[in-house]
Image 1 (tube, rainbow, N blue to C red):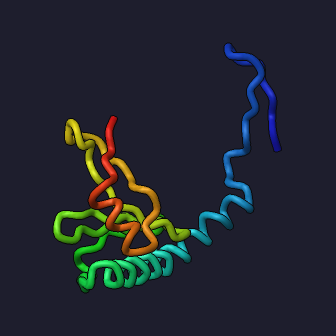
Image 2 (cartoon, rainbow, N blue to C red; image 1 turned 90 degrees about the horizontal axis):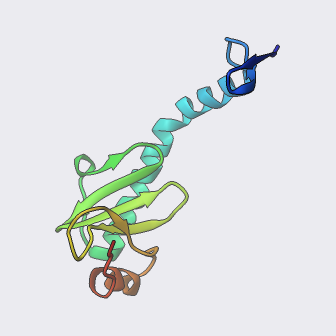
Length: 122
């Protein structure tokens, strides 16, 4: 049930205090899927890093939050997003601040470009 009131900023809508069933279902599904998403991201990033660098990465070296996974390999930071985009993260070439993402990396030549020719700038 909704109530409408006139406030100082104009017409506002107040929602019921209890969460709607679709919201509760979405939050519950997220909670159930979180461990699976983390495991999938970890496994996918591990396989891609191994294929691109030949390096096996221990599980303790990864950070995952269900939406992305991050790992550092010999000074290079790889970030994999849920959905498949793998990128290299670097600071600005000029001032060494900020975090910039390379174009998507799918092949060894893509990684070579990100490591050599790609120069992120503010």
